[in-house]
Image (cartoon, rainbow, N blue to C red; front, side, top):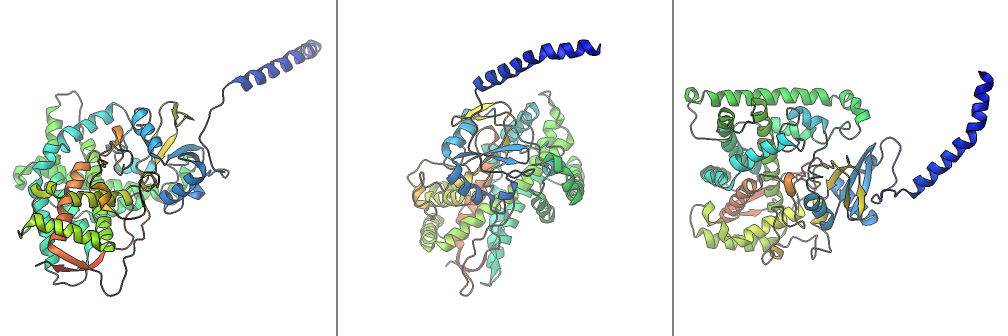
Length: 487
């Protein structure tokens, strides 16, 4: 047997060598993937060390070296970063279906009932059902218009509160957060709730997970206590929404009147005519999105818009003149007159251009191989779209670092996902469904703030424009101003 084995090896060796040579030859003929340019990476962590605070700025700088579509590695996870209009258009329009999935993110998954919300749900039948519910029943134009009185009441309440400080220094940022929180609570939950602490915890946890990017290091999140924090927060969220839903189920007993978003979801659950069963935990997951994202990004946009107006007195004066012309001495500018204020809309577009609330948007993931800008993008690749960098691209925007609302007065570019030069809310199937809801609040609030007050910075202080860390980019320090009522 031993002799036969030796003979077999002796006669087989040339054949094995030939097969190896043939395999190498045919492999060399095989077309290799044309991957996007990629910066050098470190063992284990890949390029994660390069993403410090201000990742959108770092990635913009890297794109100047490696191009509008570059490939990074978060450990073993390939991530492409799109930093041009053409790259964004191919991802969110040409290949929108392929890039409509969400990667699994450990911490968001824990606080959204296993990613059963709208923002983080996997692309598929479930996501299509809840997206349809949000678009047709919760955030349609008709539904948004139906809450006009709520918005006007809360803006008027904010104005009275500011008037009551008697021209002392006020933290305007707090007023803006309270306004958006109150509007969204009343629209979504039926009345105002004190949820700032809960929302702050969500913001604090967002983006801190290493395990979401490096699955092999998920134990680090556990060691740092993030899993425990997320689970405790999930329990707090669940108990809060459970109480709110029970209050709605027994609303006659509690004396709650009017139909809010939870009422609508409970009606859909009861109807069940489509064959899709909307479970209670799904309602809670949808509410996590609406309350959390709605309050956070809406107040952030208002905050940055007011900062830019304070830094640019000529733009502030132009907007105040428009507001006074429309207001005509009335106690406030009603929502019905906002469409007569083109400069107001231009100011908010310019604020969104310079300060996209989520500068890298929510990550996407490819479900099939695709070609983008001629490069091969393998299935399972994560995608970051640098909306912040695109909005400051000098090949598109004249003086891109300057606040110039006039650029939008005779310009059809809008933020609703059809013009890829300006995509603060994303685009395509995974674009934010709450754009109209958020911007209606922003327009009404900003119009009335500049209509009712002159704002001055206290003392000789200049306005600090430092950005905060996190997924949503806030102003790091609050806006402190002295409001003087206009005569």
